[in-house]
Image 1 (cartoon, rainbow, N blue to C red):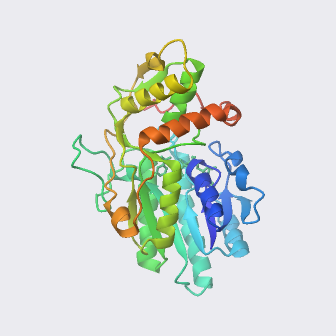
Image 2: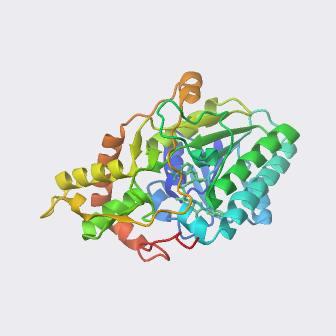
Image 3: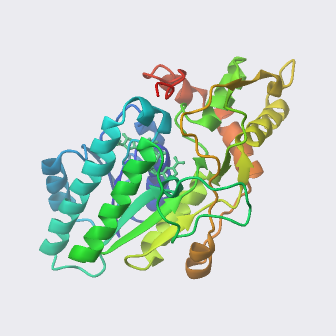
Length: 348
Ligand code: NAD
């Protein structure tokens, strides 16, 4: 299968590209190489004959038309997005343009291509989204996000992703475009851009800097190892039912404070310092509109597609810490990028 992956130089997209190539698929990686991209993430497959890179922006319809015509993909996995909630608070415009208008452009160019191919039944447009579209859950383990939970996005980021989900469903209902959707919980793992919580904590700890916890650290997230997410995405692409969405979660709910304490304990073991890393934990002003809890009910993807995460959060975090210890050159190069290392998203 030839798959057009958008956002394949980012964190999750690059894991998808690496796994898709390993599975024998041809991959066209379409990426604008924004501040969040790192083409080194796909260095291991760059010379593989199954891999092609297209430097293009999903806001550019003409470029998308050219890429569909040139590469004739069997499927699209659409991951390109502005992805950082804190940046969406300071500058929502880019999120509207890329996440909403960019997805609209992808849908229109995919539709034109699909029509030109005689409405191929095997074509797929897989839209990759987030559980943040569902809003915030109460602190009750019995209540989780299912695929029928009403949408209630509360940040500019999640609102833009919710809008893109609605467009994808509308293109299926209205035009018959063969789509599948997935909404996933928080990812972590190798190649995570150093503005997100897990790498910020690891890299600040290694530098002896404060480990910032928003608010009181009680916000709960359902953590998923990125390689497990990529595996789930390829499963949904191959076996998901047209028009259906799948929630993907790690079955690993942790408060932010618990997560940071776990990271500190792993660092104490793998890179001991003269005092416990947890002593660096510092509480900072909360994010405006910070959702209290996300948790995924993964019954559908487990029961219908037979997919489950392969690692616990403790094992995944250990692998992640080891990866950052082994790949200093990768993260050092990204620390000079605009906004990295700064507190963002407090302008509200
Ligand atoms: P990321 O920020 O690491 O990567 C995004 C990639 O998209 C970058 O390579 C960037 O250059 C590219 N991109 C951005 N704007 C573009 C444009 N206009 N045209 C072409 N390329 C563009 O993001 P990520 O964390 O890998 O997330 C990937 C997708 O998964 C996003 O759609 C996100 O909403 C979704 N998602 C992320 C998480 C998570 O925990 N990170 C969880 C669930 C869903």
